Length: 174
Image 1 (cartoon, rainbow, N blue to C red):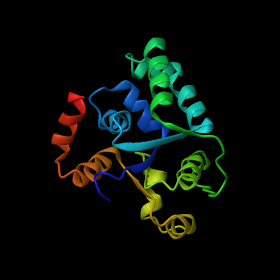
Image 2: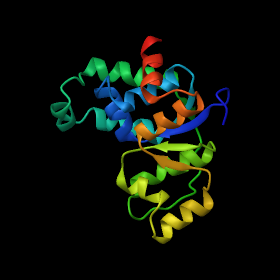
Image 3: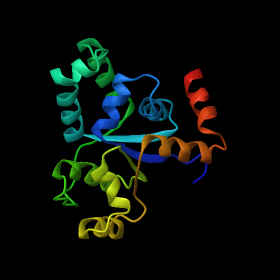
Image 4: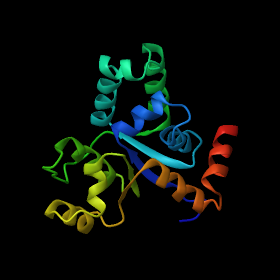
């Protein structure tokens, strides 16, 4: 992939929660890639509903006191402005190990995404796991990779001939 082409990505709920809560996180840097047009980020109704539900949970708010009502609403508005909304996401993948993760694979498949960005062990296992579901994932969605936020920053930095530190500096200067 060249620097002119854009990676297409789907971020799972946990990555977006960390992006909302921690300004200096790898997850927030990944979101900035979309905000500044380095990548294309895709969301669906299901992914936005899950995110809004999770961001408004009292237990999460205790763990991340920076997530006030105002911060959450501003984050959701910014995400809706940044990401491309996909109205129809056909069901293409079943994952008994964690059915809540199916929506991310379905969304990524619907938009021919290059990456799902996640820290979820069930999703990450799709790349290397030995179960029938993992093998089916790799066979059916071959170019799609599930990687962690830092690894995604490395991918984007490499295409731009930068280190991750240089990429983060570039993003912070925008």
